[in-house]
Length: 185
View 1 (spheres, rainbow, N blue to C red):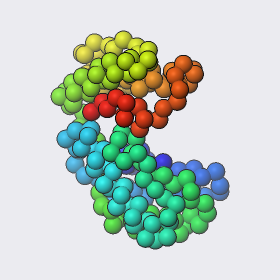
View 2: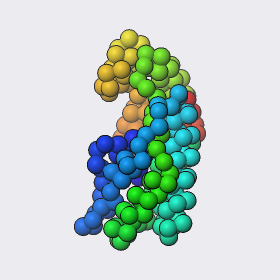
View 3: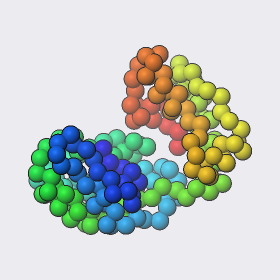
View 4: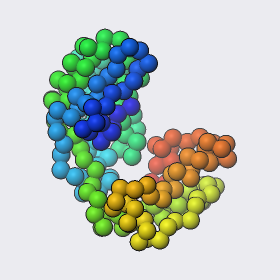
C-alpha cells in the first residue's frame, strides 16, 4: 500500500515479487501541499487525494487499485491486485499523479503539534487500557516533545497494542479497527 509521505523523495518502489516494480517515485513529480493544520485534516486530505487518484487509475482500466481505510491514520492505496504490465501501470501512475496534483503533507513538527500529539496519546492509552490492552507508561511531556521534535522514535500506545497482537495476548485488530475503538485525534 502507499501513503503520500512514504515515497517522497525516496525514489521508492513497491515490490511485487516479480521482476518489475511499481515506481512510487512517480508521485513525487506532482509536488506536495503545505503542511496540514492537524492530523485529522491530513488524513482527510490524503483520503480525498487518494480518491481522485483511484478514480483516475480506474478510468485507465486499473480497476483492482483501491482505497483502503479512508479518513483514518492508515488510509492508503491498495495495489495488491495489480499483476503484470508494469510499464503501462507506471505510465498511468505518472499521468494520474499529475492529474491528482500535489500530495498532502503532515503537520509541521512544532512544539504545539508535539503537545497535541502527547495529549492524544495519553487519551489513546486510557482507551486502549479500557479495551484490555496493557500499555507502557508514557515518558515525561518534555522527553516526548524533545524526541518528537527531533524526529526520534517516541512513545506510542499503538506499538504496545501491536506487540500484544504479535504475542497473541489480544486478538488482531487493524489500525482502522483500533481507530474505530479509540479515535486518537
